[in-house]
Every structure is written in C-alpha cells, then in structure tokens.
Image (cartoon, rainbow, N blue to C red):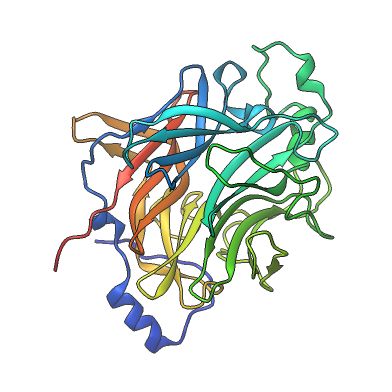
Length: 361
C-alpha cells in the first residue's frame, strides 16, 4: 500500500487531475526490481552528475563531474571538473575520453571548478549547461591530501560564488566554447544559482530548471528555492516563471537534484525528497507532473526509487546518496535513468544506470 502524502502545490483542475491519475508513469513498475548492474567509476576519482546524449557517431556520450577521492567528498565545490566518457551501448561500459571544462583560473567566474553538467543536442550543436565557481585561490596552496570541509570558511567562498554557465561545441569531443559571463547570474535576494537541467518543450521553448540560495545573514544564506525559466533559444536569455516550484511547509529546502522532461502529453519531474518533506517515503526520489511544465503536483505514483537496491547478481547496496537523476529518452519515452551513487559510510561515488522497461499492452 502506498503511503499517504502531505504537501502544498497548485493543483490542476480536478477533472484533468483525475485523467492524469489514469495515465501517469509508475517507475516502481518500469524499473526492474532487480536490475542488471551498470556502474561507471574512475579509479582515484569521485564520479557525479552523469547524463548521456547520443552523438552523430552513433556512440553514447556521458558527461559527468569528477574530483579526486584524496580530497574527500565535500571537495565537489572546490575541485570538480566536467568530463566526458564514451560507450557503444547506452548502459556501457563507458570509457573516459577527456576533460571538457577544466579549471581555467580565478580571473574567470567559472575558473576554479565546474560541476552539474547537463547536455542538450540541438540543430547539430551540443549545449553543455553547468554549475561553476571561483574561490579565493586558497585550495591551490594546499596539498592533494587536504580535504575541503564545510566547517572551513574558504569552502563557503566557493559555494557562494556558484553560478550557471553554458558551453557550446559542434562535437561531443569539443572544443567547447565558454563565455566570460554566467548564463544565469544572481538577482537581488539570491546568493547563488546552480544545478541546471534543460530540455526543449513541445512548443519549441527551452525549459531550464535550477536552484538558488536566498540571501540571509551568515555564510550559509537562507532558503533554497527551485525555479523554472524559459527561453526561445538554448543560449537564452531565460525568463523565470513567477514563483518557485515544489515547495513544502515542512522545510525551506524540501527537495534537491531534479530533472524534467515531456512524455505522453505531460511534463514530468523526478526530484529528491530530503526525507518526509513531501511524502512518507523518507529520503527518496519522487515523481511530479504538470500540464504546462510550470505548475507542478505530486504524481499519483509518487515513488521512483528509494536509496537502496538489490541487483540481479544478488548484491545489495544501501546509499547515503542516490540522486542527481538524469533521463535518457528514445522515441519520446524515458528508457534509462542515470543516478549518482554514494554508498553508506563511504567517501567515493560513481554512476549507476537503471533500465526503464515498458510492458506491451
């Protein structure tokens, strides 16, 4: 029996919502209970934020974040770089190819780290959206074994300089053209922008969802809110919808790490519930839906994936983190869900790809 849920959203007209209940996706049935194990990892590195696009060469191109394990997991904010791996098959194995967006110096807004890649292929070009920052240069003076932690003030300098950028290339192998200004900067009342996810809507517009830390006294800042922004071009300018999406009275940071897409006549979003903020599934990935891609409600089949899995070979894994969802679509339908995974009690992380299988009616 599915747990009851409590949340505040703007609901669509009741008749439309009832129809949606009959046609909504149910990932608990679409993802095999014991899937094959498809993992991408790199020796010596944490792997995160992994998504895949197919190239003109017929190969599958994974864009992901990586940073040295020797620096610890929290070094994503100081040492991450966006990299690229290639496979002949959607589920791998993937082989490292190159670093797309290396550090380029603190004279640039994105000079110290790049993170959260999301690639869109459009009109023969590749558009790579990403989070980046510059710091004070402190971490460049430390040994490779020094682990940046959230209790260090320099960690927050990097975090609070986070902005969203875009790079463009004619090939997934690059070269990537980067810009001197962020694509999504800050506005009054907002301290940071980051974690972009982008897709083209049926009306031709590009939807960019992202998160922003609100201004508040102290290094952490205030509430974390998520926004959807639209543009006629993948290069922007993007205009925010007039209110944040997916909120809860239980927390000023109820969800994180989401992805949006259009399928079967409606918009969908998978997002991480930080733990009973939206439902009673605990920390889990949840499914939301929308008629217009702007106003969202919890899907009737809300659970996508809890933070544990038993693979077909019998190995069971429990995760501290099982998030950063990315979807791969074929013929307008999700056929794979890519997640970033960090085992309980471990410092290293890697990619897990889960198949999404539709049963014939």
